[in-house]
Length: 608
Ligand code: GLU
Image 1: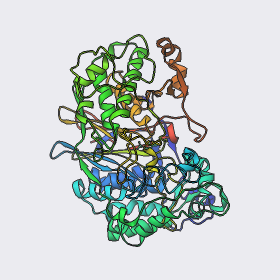
Image 2 (image 1 turned 60 degrees about the horizontal axis):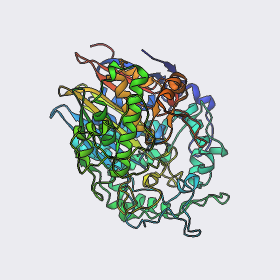
Image 3 (image 1 turned 90 degrees about the horizontal axis):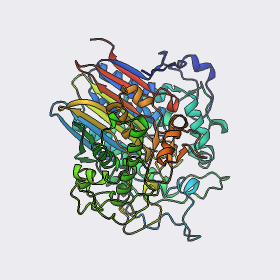
Image 4 (image 1 turned 180 degrees about the horizontal axis):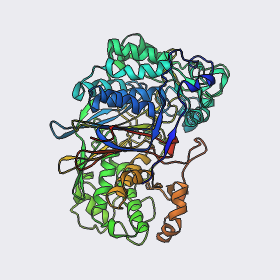
């Protein structure tokens, strides 16, 4: 079992290192608690896994005081809004999946951001030049990319539907962390540095995240009093104070006239979001996607995310092969090929079902998967991109001729955060939330302490009327987020999810295969090196994966390219969290041992 323990400096010990700035100062009320990071924890009575020890501690505190998994998930998410503000927060959106122990049913909330009512379909074209905006850094650092945030509405809906706490109670731990501050680690500093020129483009963002012109130092204490005040407002008045009132007006005017600094040469195109768009936002209750894999029931997020249908289709394809009896490279070859096929269908068919006809049932139909499996040559990688299947006519029999071609374009960035919580009653929450890329749009709402998303860049960048993911006003851009809950004989077996843009789908898929087919325990399944085939000529792979498997996989005709790009410093794919449910009522919470600086797994009690 892979298990890394890391002890971070306590907030108290870090006081000497605290730096000054609008939101960074030595806290008067530091919590003396030492924060311990464990990547794996096994025990009873409740469990949590997140990327961050403060967020895991917040969830555990709620569970300890009698709250349930929905309450604890909201508390953890709000805390991540403080400690992981570049990945998630009230300026973004996400998808919440919940297993309700009382009904035995899985339900989901679609809290995806929506396009403003006035967003034109040529919003990504620079009117001055007639050419598309450069994707990075121009489009990603813009008001144009900001969708109507869904996260506050998701929290409120999750608590109403499954929780026992009020929003105010669930926000308490996060308010405490925002007020007393948290200790800056290398990941936070590096993410700030990666975004330095974007953050420096805005007066509000630079004063919050670049105090004194630099990223906060490792070991210093970072406080966010503005965010604490915004959370207190939501605690007092509910989300009406976000989707209406002065804050809604400020969000709209920030998007329409971003607070640019005088010196920036970024163009920062203005956006279209209005207070009316905010007033009209709704988080949606939705049926989960469902497939059966090796006798397990796999529930995921149906469109507007492509997470559930794409992992589901790939699992249906792989269910027709016996991976457990294959060599590891043989099993990986099938994984990569199944993933490419499922991505071809995602590209052709998946968008917001409120705007386009999405064949969710066909995409998750085992017969369709069986027919798609015909395209896999057990000895040879297909040339990419592979063609999509035909959802209008399939019978599980290998077709003679393929359907029309569609290429997969991938502009999603790799940010986001995921958390998993279970309680003593057997409820399970799996929640992925994001502001899109690390640092979102780069725009902090002045005086409010949070970044706005740039989720609308998940729409296809080139408008095509036949593309299910084309820009349309009011629409949710297609997501890859894939919070997943797996039941065995009706009871939770495994819950998992990950950040990572479109690699979310492959990370969740690969982790399931590692656990279910390849004999790994859940900690090993998360720690194992990753590769991602999203229907492109080359497989994107972590260096450790390339070291271990390149020789074998090139024998099948796969080409492996190292992950990471010029814009981000990390060469990692994903940052998964999971809980596995053990016979006899135990739970193993598992987080990343190394990726993103390591995650934080905790259980309520180590023994009964
Ligand atoms: N915007 C991405 C999605 O919805 C998530 C961003 C990320 O994980 O980096 O799929």
